[in-house]
Length: 464
Ligand SMILES: Cc1cc2nc3c(=O)[nH]c(=O)nc-3n(C[C@H](O)[C@H](O)[C@H](O)COP(=O)(O)OP(=O)(O)OC[C@H]3O[C@@H](n4cnc5c(N)ncnc54)[C@H](O)[C@@H]3O)c2cc1C
Image (tube, rainbow, N blue to C red; front, side, top):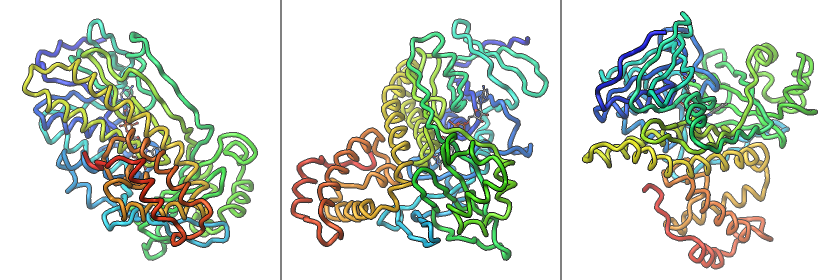
Protein backbone atom coordinates (compact mmCIF):
# COMPACT_ATOMS: atom_id res chain seq x y z
CA UNK A 1 0.00 0.00 0.00
CA UNK A 2 1.48 3.36 -1.07
CA UNK A 3 0.61 6.48 0.94
CA UNK A 4 0.26 9.83 -0.79
CA UNK A 5 1.17 13.15 0.84
CA UNK A 6 -1.56 15.32 2.37
CA UNK A 7 -2.90 17.99 0.03
CA UNK A 8 -1.68 21.40 1.15
CA UNK A 9 -3.50 23.56 -1.41
CA UNK A 10 -6.89 24.35 0.18
CA UNK A 11 -8.57 24.75 -3.20
CA UNK A 12 -8.28 21.16 -4.32
CA UNK A 13 -11.33 18.96 -4.70
CA UNK A 14 -11.18 15.22 -5.21
CA UNK A 15 -13.87 13.73 -7.44
CA UNK A 16 -14.64 10.02 -7.69
CA UNK A 17 -16.19 9.02 -11.02
CA UNK A 18 -15.38 10.55 -14.41
CA UNK A 19 -18.74 9.74 -15.99
CA UNK A 20 -20.96 12.48 -17.40
CA UNK A 21 -21.48 14.40 -14.17
CA UNK A 22 -17.95 14.04 -12.76
CA UNK A 23 -16.25 15.14 -15.96
CA UNK A 24 -18.54 18.16 -16.46
CA UNK A 25 -18.21 19.13 -12.79
CA UNK A 26 -14.41 19.01 -13.14
CA UNK A 27 -14.64 21.61 -15.93
CA UNK A 28 -16.97 23.85 -13.93
CA UNK A 29 -14.73 23.71 -10.83
CA UNK A 30 -11.54 24.31 -12.82
CA UNK A 31 -13.17 27.36 -14.41
CA UNK A 32 -13.40 28.72 -10.87
CA UNK A 33 -9.69 28.21 -10.28
CA UNK A 34 -10.20 25.05 -8.23
CA UNK A 35 -7.73 22.22 -8.74
CA UNK A 36 -9.41 18.85 -9.32
CA UNK A 37 -8.11 15.34 -8.71
CA UNK A 38 -10.49 13.07 -10.67
CA UNK A 39 -10.41 9.30 -10.15
CA UNK A 40 -12.17 6.82 -12.44
CA UNK A 41 -12.29 3.04 -12.13
CA UNK A 42 -12.57 2.38 -15.86
CA UNK A 43 -9.94 2.86 -18.56
CA UNK A 44 -9.75 6.11 -20.50
CA UNK A 45 -12.65 5.79 -22.98
CA UNK A 46 -10.79 8.11 -25.38
CA UNK A 47 -8.02 5.53 -25.79
CA UNK A 48 -9.48 2.12 -25.03
CA UNK A 49 -12.32 0.72 -27.10
CA UNK A 50 -14.80 0.42 -24.24
CA UNK A 51 -18.49 1.11 -24.27
CA UNK A 52 -19.53 4.21 -22.38
CA UNK A 53 -21.74 2.03 -20.21
CA UNK A 54 -25.47 1.66 -20.27
CA UNK A 55 -27.63 3.49 -22.83
CA UNK A 56 -25.68 4.41 -25.94
CA UNK A 57 -27.56 7.63 -26.47
CA UNK A 58 -29.44 9.98 -24.18
CA UNK A 59 -32.00 12.75 -24.40
CA UNK A 60 -30.43 16.11 -23.61
CA UNK A 61 -32.82 18.89 -22.60
CA UNK A 62 -32.63 22.52 -21.40
CA UNK A 63 -31.54 21.70 -17.87
CA UNK A 64 -28.52 19.84 -19.22
CA UNK A 65 -27.76 22.41 -21.91
CA UNK A 66 -27.49 25.34 -19.48
CA UNK A 67 -24.56 23.81 -17.49
CA UNK A 68 -22.84 22.78 -20.74
CA UNK A 69 -23.16 26.40 -21.91
CA UNK A 70 -21.76 27.66 -18.61
CA UNK A 71 -18.82 25.28 -19.05
CA UNK A 72 -18.27 26.73 -22.54
CA UNK A 73 -18.87 23.37 -24.20
CA UNK A 74 -21.95 23.88 -26.37
CA UNK A 75 -19.91 24.72 -29.49
CA UNK A 76 -18.38 21.26 -29.25
CA UNK A 77 -21.65 19.54 -28.27
CA UNK A 78 -23.99 21.10 -30.88
CA UNK A 79 -22.51 19.21 -33.86
CA UNK A 80 -23.20 15.85 -32.19
CA UNK A 81 -26.87 16.54 -31.40
CA UNK A 82 -29.87 15.16 -33.29
CA UNK A 83 -33.08 17.12 -32.76
CA UNK A 84 -36.17 15.27 -31.52
CA UNK A 85 -39.30 17.38 -31.97
CA UNK A 86 -41.80 15.00 -30.46
CA UNK A 87 -42.80 11.40 -29.97
CA UNK A 88 -43.73 9.23 -32.93
CA UNK A 89 -46.22 6.73 -31.56
CA UNK A 90 -46.40 3.41 -33.45
CA UNK A 91 -49.61 1.46 -32.96
CA UNK A 92 -50.21 -2.30 -33.29
CA UNK A 93 -51.34 -1.90 -36.92
CA UNK A 94 -48.11 -0.14 -37.86
CA UNK A 95 -49.64 3.36 -38.07
CA UNK A 96 -47.58 6.31 -36.91
CA UNK A 97 -48.96 9.27 -34.94
CA UNK A 98 -46.66 12.24 -34.26
CA UNK A 99 -47.17 14.11 -30.97
CA UNK A 100 -45.22 17.35 -30.67
CA UNK A 101 -43.37 17.82 -27.36
CA UNK A 102 -43.93 21.56 -27.32
CA UNK A 103 -45.63 24.28 -29.32
CA UNK A 104 -42.73 26.61 -30.03
CA UNK A 105 -39.95 25.98 -32.51
CA UNK A 106 -37.29 25.87 -29.80
CA UNK A 107 -39.24 23.37 -27.68
CA UNK A 108 -37.34 20.26 -28.72
CA UNK A 109 -34.98 17.81 -27.07
CA UNK A 110 -31.81 16.26 -28.47
CA UNK A 111 -30.39 12.79 -28.82
CA UNK A 112 -26.69 12.64 -27.98
CA UNK A 113 -24.11 9.86 -27.77
CA UNK A 114 -23.18 9.20 -24.14
CA UNK A 115 -19.62 8.30 -25.09
CA UNK A 116 -19.02 11.33 -27.32
CA UNK A 117 -20.45 13.72 -24.74
CA UNK A 118 -18.33 12.17 -21.99
CA UNK A 119 -15.20 12.46 -24.16
CA UNK A 120 -15.88 16.17 -24.84
CA UNK A 121 -16.13 16.79 -21.08
CA UNK A 122 -12.95 14.79 -20.33
CA UNK A 123 -10.98 16.66 -23.01
CA UNK A 124 -12.24 20.01 -21.75
CA UNK A 125 -11.39 19.11 -18.15
CA UNK A 126 -7.80 18.23 -19.06
CA UNK A 127 -7.48 21.31 -21.23
CA UNK A 128 -8.06 23.58 -18.24
CA UNK A 129 -4.66 22.50 -16.89
CA UNK A 130 -6.18 22.24 -13.40
CA UNK A 131 -7.61 18.72 -13.63
CA UNK A 132 -5.61 15.52 -13.18
CA UNK A 133 -7.48 12.39 -14.23
CA UNK A 134 -6.43 8.98 -12.89
CA UNK A 135 -7.98 6.03 -14.74
CA UNK A 136 -8.33 2.40 -13.61
CA UNK A 137 -8.57 3.57 -9.99
CA UNK A 138 -11.41 1.91 -8.13
CA UNK A 139 -12.39 3.63 -4.90
CA UNK A 140 -12.62 0.82 -2.34
CA UNK A 141 -13.32 2.80 0.83
CA UNK A 142 -12.97 6.18 2.52
CA UNK A 143 -11.66 7.00 5.99
CA UNK A 144 -13.19 10.29 7.07
CA UNK A 145 -11.06 10.49 10.27
CA UNK A 146 -7.79 10.60 8.37
CA UNK A 147 -9.28 12.06 5.13
CA UNK A 148 -7.90 9.20 3.07
CA UNK A 149 -9.30 7.21 0.17
CA UNK A 150 -8.28 3.65 -0.53
CA UNK A 151 -7.93 2.87 -4.26
CA UNK A 152 -7.20 -0.39 -6.04
CA UNK A 153 -5.83 -0.28 -9.56
CA UNK A 154 -8.20 -2.27 -11.77
CA UNK A 155 -5.33 -3.55 -13.95
CA UNK A 156 -2.34 -3.99 -11.65
CA UNK A 157 -4.26 -4.54 -8.38
CA UNK A 158 -1.86 -2.06 -6.74
CA UNK A 159 -3.39 -0.40 -3.71
CA UNK A 160 -2.96 3.28 -2.81
CA UNK A 161 -4.05 5.60 -0.02
CA UNK A 162 -4.76 9.11 -1.24
CA UNK A 163 -5.46 12.16 0.94
CA UNK A 164 -8.27 14.58 0.21
CA UNK A 165 -9.57 17.89 1.52
CA UNK A 166 -13.07 17.80 0.04
CA UNK A 167 -14.44 14.75 -1.69
CA UNK A 168 -17.31 14.64 -4.19
CA UNK A 169 -18.90 11.34 -5.16
CA UNK A 170 -19.98 11.36 -8.79
CA UNK A 171 -19.57 7.61 -8.92
CA UNK A 172 -23.02 6.64 -10.11
CA UNK A 173 -25.92 4.64 -8.76
CA UNK A 174 -23.83 2.08 -6.82
CA UNK A 175 -21.76 4.85 -5.24
CA UNK A 176 -18.90 3.86 -2.91
CA UNK A 177 -18.86 7.42 -1.52
CA UNK A 178 -22.56 7.16 -0.64
CA UNK A 179 -21.82 3.92 1.25
CA UNK A 180 -18.92 5.57 3.05
CA UNK A 181 -20.98 8.60 4.16
CA UNK A 182 -23.88 6.46 5.26
CA UNK A 183 -21.64 4.19 7.32
CA UNK A 184 -20.76 7.04 9.65
CA UNK A 185 -23.79 9.33 9.41
CA UNK A 186 -27.26 8.17 10.39
CA UNK A 187 -28.98 8.00 7.03
CA UNK A 188 -32.00 7.09 5.01
CA UNK A 189 -31.25 5.02 1.93
CA UNK A 190 -34.03 3.51 -0.19
CA UNK A 191 -33.53 1.46 -3.33
CA UNK A 192 -36.91 1.05 -5.01
CA UNK A 193 -36.75 -1.69 -7.63
CA UNK A 194 -39.18 -0.94 -10.48
CA UNK A 195 -39.62 -4.62 -11.30
CA UNK A 196 -38.97 -3.74 -14.94
CA UNK A 197 -35.73 -4.04 -16.87
CA UNK A 198 -34.38 -2.91 -20.24
CA UNK A 199 -32.41 -4.21 -23.16
CA UNK A 200 -30.80 -2.29 -26.01
CA UNK A 201 -31.17 -3.29 -29.66
CA UNK A 202 -30.23 -1.48 -32.86
CA UNK A 203 -31.83 -0.30 -36.08
CA UNK A 204 -28.92 0.18 -38.50
CA UNK A 205 -28.80 2.88 -41.18
CA UNK A 206 -30.51 1.96 -44.45
CA UNK A 207 -28.66 0.66 -47.51
CA UNK A 208 -27.82 4.17 -48.69
CA UNK A 209 -26.90 5.43 -45.25
CA UNK A 210 -30.36 6.88 -44.65
CA UNK A 211 -32.49 6.93 -41.49
CA UNK A 212 -35.05 4.12 -41.81
CA UNK A 213 -37.65 5.82 -39.61
CA UNK A 214 -38.23 9.52 -38.94
CA UNK A 215 -34.95 11.09 -37.85
CA UNK A 216 -36.37 13.89 -35.72
CA UNK A 217 -38.61 11.91 -33.38
CA UNK A 218 -38.29 9.84 -30.27
CA UNK A 219 -40.12 6.70 -31.42
CA UNK A 220 -42.40 4.81 -29.04
CA UNK A 221 -44.24 1.53 -29.49
CA UNK A 222 -46.51 1.64 -26.39
CA UNK A 223 -48.06 -1.70 -25.49
CA UNK A 224 -49.50 -1.20 -22.01
CA UNK A 225 -47.33 -3.27 -19.68
CA UNK A 226 -44.20 -2.80 -21.78
CA UNK A 227 -42.84 -0.68 -24.62
CA UNK A 228 -40.13 -0.23 -27.18
CA UNK A 229 -38.47 3.14 -27.82
CA UNK A 230 -35.89 4.33 -30.37
CA UNK A 231 -33.60 7.38 -30.32
CA UNK A 232 -31.69 8.52 -33.42
CA UNK A 233 -27.89 8.43 -33.68
CA UNK A 234 -25.71 10.66 -35.83
CA UNK A 235 -24.75 7.73 -38.11
CA UNK A 236 -28.44 7.26 -39.11
CA UNK A 237 -28.86 4.24 -36.86
CA UNK A 238 -31.29 4.14 -33.92
CA UNK A 239 -30.65 2.81 -30.45
CA UNK A 240 -33.75 0.83 -29.57
CA UNK A 241 -34.64 -0.03 -25.99
CA UNK A 242 -37.16 -2.63 -24.88
CA UNK A 243 -38.64 -1.98 -21.41
CA UNK A 244 -40.68 -4.76 -19.83
CA UNK A 245 -41.20 -6.64 -16.55
CA UNK A 246 -38.17 -8.53 -15.30
CA UNK A 247 -40.23 -11.61 -14.41
CA UNK A 248 -43.70 -12.94 -15.18
CA UNK A 249 -45.75 -14.10 -18.18
CA UNK A 250 -44.53 -11.40 -20.54
CA UNK A 251 -41.06 -10.61 -19.29
CA UNK A 252 -37.34 -10.80 -19.95
CA UNK A 253 -37.30 -14.03 -17.95
CA UNK A 254 -39.93 -15.63 -20.18
CA UNK A 255 -38.22 -14.69 -23.47
CA UNK A 256 -35.54 -17.34 -23.08
CA UNK A 257 -34.94 -18.56 -26.63
CA UNK A 258 -34.75 -17.26 -30.22
CA UNK A 259 -38.21 -18.56 -31.19
CA UNK A 260 -39.91 -16.84 -28.26
CA UNK A 261 -38.19 -13.54 -29.06
CA UNK A 262 -39.23 -13.76 -32.72
CA UNK A 263 -42.80 -14.66 -31.83
CA UNK A 264 -42.98 -11.84 -29.29
CA UNK A 265 -41.77 -9.22 -31.78
CA UNK A 266 -43.99 -10.57 -34.58
CA UNK A 267 -47.00 -10.32 -32.31
CA UNK A 268 -46.35 -6.99 -30.58
CA UNK A 269 -43.83 -5.03 -32.65
CA UNK A 270 -44.35 -6.47 -36.11
CA UNK A 271 -43.52 -3.26 -37.97
CA UNK A 272 -40.03 -3.17 -36.42
CA UNK A 273 -38.91 -6.61 -37.57
CA UNK A 274 -37.65 -5.52 -40.98
CA UNK A 275 -35.56 -2.81 -39.28
CA UNK A 276 -33.99 -5.14 -36.71
CA UNK A 277 -31.87 -7.56 -38.79
CA UNK A 278 -29.85 -8.77 -35.78
CA UNK A 279 -32.75 -8.82 -33.31
CA UNK A 280 -32.23 -12.33 -31.92
CA UNK A 281 -28.44 -12.07 -31.78
CA UNK A 282 -28.59 -8.64 -30.09
CA UNK A 283 -31.29 -9.79 -27.69
CA UNK A 284 -29.10 -12.53 -26.27
CA UNK A 285 -25.74 -10.77 -26.64
CA UNK A 286 -26.75 -7.51 -24.93
CA UNK A 287 -27.19 -7.34 -21.17
CA UNK A 288 -30.54 -6.88 -19.46
CA UNK A 289 -30.34 -3.83 -17.18
CA UNK A 290 -32.49 -3.56 -14.07
CA UNK A 291 -34.27 -0.31 -13.28
CA UNK A 292 -34.41 1.18 -9.82
CA UNK A 293 -34.75 4.50 -8.03
CA UNK A 294 -32.24 5.40 -5.33
CA UNK A 295 -33.31 8.01 -2.79
CA UNK A 296 -30.94 8.81 0.03
CA UNK A 297 -30.22 11.39 2.69
CA UNK A 298 -27.98 13.10 3.63
CA UNK A 299 -26.14 13.92 0.44
CA UNK A 300 -23.19 15.35 2.34
CA UNK A 301 -20.95 14.79 5.35
CA UNK A 302 -19.83 17.90 7.24
CA UNK A 303 -17.37 19.94 5.18
CA UNK A 304 -15.79 16.75 3.84
CA UNK A 305 -17.97 15.07 1.27
CA UNK A 306 -20.89 15.56 -1.10
CA UNK A 307 -22.82 13.30 -3.49
CA UNK A 308 -24.00 14.47 -6.91
CA UNK A 309 -25.56 12.90 -9.99
CA UNK A 310 -26.71 9.28 -9.87
CA UNK A 311 -24.70 8.75 -6.67
CA UNK A 312 -27.27 10.96 -4.93
CA UNK A 313 -30.39 10.21 -6.98
CA UNK A 314 -30.49 7.35 -9.45
CA UNK A 315 -33.83 7.59 -11.25
CA UNK A 316 -35.62 5.52 -13.88
CA UNK A 317 -35.02 6.81 -17.43
CA UNK A 318 -38.59 7.59 -18.52
CA UNK A 319 -38.34 11.37 -18.34
CA UNK A 320 -34.88 11.40 -19.92
CA UNK A 321 -33.66 13.47 -16.98
CA UNK A 322 -31.03 11.51 -15.01
CA UNK A 323 -28.06 13.15 -16.71
CA UNK A 324 -29.87 16.47 -17.08
CA UNK A 325 -30.56 16.51 -13.34
CA UNK A 326 -26.95 15.54 -12.58
CA UNK A 327 -25.68 18.39 -14.77
CA UNK A 328 -28.04 20.72 -12.93
CA UNK A 329 -26.57 19.50 -9.62
CA UNK A 330 -23.11 20.34 -10.95
CA UNK A 331 -23.95 23.89 -12.00
CA UNK A 332 -25.86 24.46 -8.76
CA UNK A 333 -22.73 23.55 -6.78
CA UNK A 334 -20.54 25.75 -8.99
CA UNK A 335 -22.88 28.74 -8.63
CA UNK A 336 -23.14 28.18 -4.87
CA UNK A 337 -19.34 28.33 -4.72
CA UNK A 338 -19.53 31.64 -6.63
CA UNK A 339 -21.98 33.02 -4.06
CA UNK A 340 -19.49 32.22 -1.29
CA UNK A 341 -16.35 33.20 -3.17
CA UNK A 342 -15.84 36.49 -1.27
CA UNK A 343 -15.72 34.68 2.07
CA UNK A 344 -13.13 32.30 3.34
CA UNK A 345 -14.78 29.33 1.61
CA UNK A 346 -16.85 27.33 4.10
CA UNK A 347 -17.34 23.96 2.41
CA UNK A 348 -19.63 22.73 5.18
CA UNK A 349 -22.05 25.58 4.41
CA UNK A 350 -21.81 25.05 0.67
CA UNK A 351 -22.38 21.29 0.87
CA UNK A 352 -25.33 21.79 3.22
CA UNK A 353 -26.92 24.35 0.90
CA UNK A 354 -26.51 22.02 -2.10
CA UNK A 355 -28.00 19.13 -0.12
CA UNK A 356 -30.98 21.19 1.08
CA UNK A 357 -31.72 22.63 -2.35
CA UNK A 358 -31.10 19.64 -4.57
CA UNK A 359 -32.48 16.75 -2.48
CA UNK A 360 -36.19 17.79 -2.83
CA UNK A 361 -35.60 18.30 -6.54
CA UNK A 362 -33.93 14.91 -6.93
CA UNK A 363 -36.87 13.30 -5.16
CA UNK A 364 -39.38 15.17 -7.35
CA UNK A 365 -37.83 14.15 -10.67
CA UNK A 366 -37.49 10.57 -9.40
CA UNK A 367 -41.26 10.47 -8.81
CA UNK A 368 -42.13 12.18 -12.09
CA UNK A 369 -39.86 9.75 -13.98
CA UNK A 370 -41.78 6.77 -12.59
CA UNK A 371 -45.11 8.43 -13.50
CA UNK A 372 -43.85 9.07 -17.01
CA UNK A 373 -43.33 5.33 -17.59
CA UNK A 374 -47.10 4.93 -17.46
CA UNK A 375 -47.53 7.90 -19.81
CA UNK A 376 -45.08 6.49 -22.36
CA UNK A 377 -46.13 2.87 -22.33
CA UNK A 378 -49.87 3.49 -22.10
CA UNK A 379 -51.38 6.99 -21.92
CA UNK A 380 -49.86 8.31 -25.18
CA UNK A 381 -52.38 6.18 -27.10
CA UNK A 382 -55.37 7.29 -25.01
CA UNK A 383 -57.73 9.87 -26.58
CA UNK A 384 -58.35 11.58 -23.24
CA UNK A 385 -54.60 12.02 -22.74
CA UNK A 386 -54.34 13.59 -26.21
CA UNK A 387 -57.28 15.90 -25.51
CA UNK A 388 -55.76 16.99 -22.19
CA UNK A 389 -52.43 17.65 -23.94
CA UNK A 390 -54.23 19.83 -26.51
CA UNK A 391 -56.07 21.71 -23.73
CA UNK A 392 -52.74 22.15 -21.92
CA UNK A 393 -51.14 23.75 -24.99
CA UNK A 394 -54.17 26.05 -25.37
CA UNK A 395 -54.01 27.10 -21.71
CA UNK A 396 -50.31 27.81 -22.12
CA UNK A 397 -51.16 30.07 -25.10
CA UNK A 398 -53.94 31.89 -23.25
CA UNK A 399 -52.30 32.14 -19.81
CA UNK A 400 -48.54 31.99 -20.43
CA UNK A 401 -47.65 33.57 -17.11
CA UNK A 402 -49.65 30.96 -15.15
CA UNK A 403 -49.85 27.71 -17.10
CA UNK A 404 -47.12 25.59 -18.66
CA UNK A 405 -47.61 21.87 -19.44
CA UNK A 406 -45.70 19.69 -16.99
CA UNK A 407 -43.64 18.00 -19.67
CA UNK A 408 -42.56 21.45 -20.89
CA UNK A 409 -41.71 22.63 -17.36
CA UNK A 410 -39.42 19.63 -16.93
CA UNK A 411 -37.85 19.50 -20.39
CA UNK A 412 -37.76 23.07 -21.72
CA UNK A 413 -37.40 25.19 -18.58
CA UNK A 414 -35.33 25.32 -15.43
CA UNK A 415 -37.78 26.01 -12.60
CA UNK A 416 -37.09 23.60 -9.73
CA UNK A 417 -38.36 20.06 -10.35
CA UNK A 418 -40.19 20.16 -7.02
CA UNK A 419 -42.17 23.20 -8.19
CA UNK A 420 -42.86 21.60 -11.57
CA UNK A 421 -44.20 18.55 -9.74
CA UNK A 422 -46.44 20.60 -7.40
CA UNK A 423 -47.80 22.77 -10.20
CA UNK A 424 -48.25 19.66 -12.32
CA UNK A 425 -50.63 18.15 -9.74
CA UNK A 426 -52.83 21.28 -9.74
CA UNK A 427 -52.70 21.55 -13.52
CA UNK A 428 -53.72 17.91 -13.90
CA UNK A 429 -56.80 18.58 -11.73
CA UNK A 430 -57.70 21.55 -13.95
CA UNK A 431 -57.19 19.55 -17.15
CA UNK A 432 -59.25 16.65 -15.82
CA UNK A 433 -62.10 19.03 -14.95
CA UNK A 434 -61.98 20.77 -18.33
CA UNK A 435 -61.82 17.49 -20.28
CA UNK A 436 -64.85 16.06 -18.45
CA UNK A 437 -67.73 15.32 -20.84
CA UNK A 438 -65.82 16.84 -23.78
CA UNK A 439 -64.33 15.09 -26.79
CA UNK A 440 -62.80 18.01 -28.69
CA UNK A 441 -60.86 21.15 -27.86
CA UNK A 442 -63.61 23.34 -29.24
CA UNK A 443 -66.07 21.95 -26.66
CA UNK A 444 -63.94 23.12 -23.71
CA UNK A 445 -65.38 25.82 -21.44
CA UNK A 446 -62.62 28.44 -21.56
CA UNK A 447 -64.43 30.79 -19.16
CA UNK A 448 -64.22 28.04 -16.56
CA UNK A 449 -60.60 27.46 -17.62
CA UNK A 450 -59.77 31.12 -16.92
CA UNK A 451 -61.40 30.99 -13.48
CA UNK A 452 -59.61 27.77 -12.55
CA UNK A 453 -56.18 28.78 -13.84
CA UNK A 454 -56.17 32.22 -12.23
CA UNK A 455 -57.63 30.94 -8.94
CA UNK A 456 -55.53 27.82 -8.48
CA UNK A 457 -52.19 28.72 -10.06
CA UNK A 458 -49.81 31.47 -9.00
CA UNK A 459 -47.64 33.19 -11.60
CA UNK A 460 -44.82 30.96 -12.76
CA UNK A 461 -41.15 31.86 -13.11
CA UNK A 462 -40.05 29.30 -15.66
CA UNK A 463 -36.35 30.13 -15.72
CA UNK A 464 -35.31 31.55 -12.35
C1 LIG B 1 -31.45 2.98 -20.19
C2 LIG B 1 -31.12 4.34 -19.67
C3 LIG B 1 -31.46 5.45 -20.42
C4 LIG B 1 -31.18 6.72 -19.95
N1 LIG B 1 -31.58 7.79 -20.69
C5 LIG B 1 -31.35 9.04 -20.23
C6 LIG B 1 -31.74 10.18 -21.00
O1 LIG B 1 -32.29 10.04 -22.09
N2 LIG B 1 -31.48 11.42 -20.51
C7 LIG B 1 -30.88 11.60 -19.29
O2 LIG B 1 -30.69 12.75 -18.88
N3 LIG B 1 -30.49 10.54 -18.54
C8 LIG B 1 -30.70 9.28 -18.97
N4 LIG B 1 -30.30 8.21 -18.23
C9 LIG B 1 -29.67 8.44 -16.94
C10 LIG B 1 -28.18 8.74 -17.09
O3 LIG B 1 -27.56 7.66 -17.74
C11 LIG B 1 -27.55 8.94 -15.72
O4 LIG B 1 -28.34 9.79 -14.94
C12 LIG B 1 -26.15 9.54 -15.85
O5 LIG B 1 -25.31 8.63 -16.52
C13 LIG B 1 -25.59 9.85 -14.48
O6 LIG B 1 -24.29 10.31 -14.61
P1 LIG B 1 -23.27 10.13 -13.40
O7 LIG B 1 -21.99 10.72 -13.89
O8 LIG B 1 -23.89 10.62 -12.15
O9 LIG B 1 -23.12 8.55 -13.22
P2 LIG B 1 -22.49 7.50 -14.22
O10 LIG B 1 -22.79 7.86 -15.62
O11 LIG B 1 -22.93 6.17 -13.72
O12 LIG B 1 -20.93 7.66 -14.01
C14 LIG B 1 -20.30 7.23 -12.82
C15 LIG B 1 -18.83 7.04 -13.09
O13 LIG B 1 -18.20 6.66 -11.88
C16 LIG B 1 -17.34 5.55 -12.09
N5 LIG B 1 -17.27 4.81 -10.83
C17 LIG B 1 -18.27 4.09 -10.25
N6 LIG B 1 -17.85 3.55 -9.09
C18 LIG B 1 -16.56 3.94 -8.93
C19 LIG B 1 -15.59 3.69 -7.93
N7 LIG B 1 -15.86 2.93 -6.85
N8 LIG B 1 -14.35 4.23 -8.08
C20 LIG B 1 -14.04 5.00 -9.17
N9 LIG B 1 -14.94 5.27 -10.15
C21 LIG B 1 -16.18 4.74 -10.03
C22 LIG B 1 -18.02 4.78 -13.21
O14 LIG B 1 -17.11 3.93 -13.90
C23 LIG B 1 -18.56 5.90 -14.09
O15 LIG B 1 -17.63 6.33 -15.05
C24 LIG B 1 -30.54 6.91 -18.69
C25 LIG B 1 -30.20 5.79 -17.94
C26 LIG B 1 -30.47 4.53 -18.42
C27 LIG B 1 -30.11 3.34 -17.59
